[in-house]
Length: 459
Image (cartoon, rainbow, N blue to C red; front, side, top):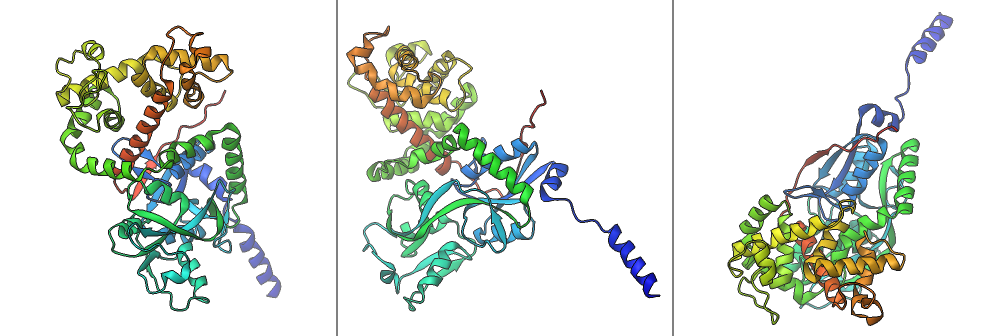
């Protein structure tokens, strides 16, 4: 009997096979399930397309695997790691601290270094250390790294109190600080840099805790998948794609201008609503993103249709008489005509650029040409090529545009002198306004988004 039982058990055990490795499951399923949260550093969805740093990275990784991307957007930041640990998602891409919860998940390679920051409202007394937070109203996400930091601080500051909100996003917490609903919150530095233009009354009081590294979280034991993640990040770091993605989002966060940000937000509320339908209609006619047109319009006139420059350009899009005639604009101070004229003129400039130039370089080169003139932009591209740069990359041309004011260089090109540094500032400002409009003016929360990723073709 004992022998019979042993034989039966052996047969049963032999018939039970282990589930295939996670990477094999993903490839067989044809889908990579990624959990994240809403925000400019992670994922958000406007009227045209999904955006966000983590979204772009996840989309690129899914494409590398040759599978579709299925993105799960959670409104509970503390749920990401538990969901990965129980394999409800294949990985979490939510700007997660690599050092946290390594007992339940494993992490891929770090791709950013940031620090937690205490945020307070301008006009109130700035706290300088944790002791100054005692007795204050503090909100942080539930189960977060910020809550863990406050837990650690209790040994030294036992009267420290805070509230953990399971559903509050970092943006919601920063909004509460700006509106005086709470005194302080704690936010990772990279996320606050993306939010501070939207909430200019908020400030960084001080950093708390050690600098930490951001990485994707994967289930324990998913070694083959982790190897693929590591290879992917090594590849995009080597090609410069990682730097380009980060630059695209953090560019608007540089050189924070308190007065300019307050004015921009005020004008979004008071001026943009009068003209937003003109911009949207112009997008339908021209194919140019209405938010880009609005960003150009704000840089040109601060959305003032009566604006006139000393050189005679006028209207909401500040068209010259020559440009207005070229696009059949009869009345440059008529807001609708000006917006349509600006959209058609911009499209004309864009179409002059070689089709081989990829986005977003093509757009920013066109924006510079809108300001300085297409001929001067071509001169700057020629100088870029002479100096060994790439004339199809905006950052390379941007570095050479100021040389158009240098006689040693403008004497060597066809159109001569131009104030290239003005075009650089102009384009930089349009980029900032565009990114802020993309996040502020047209975002919505989406609980689930499924994005088909292009499959690699076999040669």
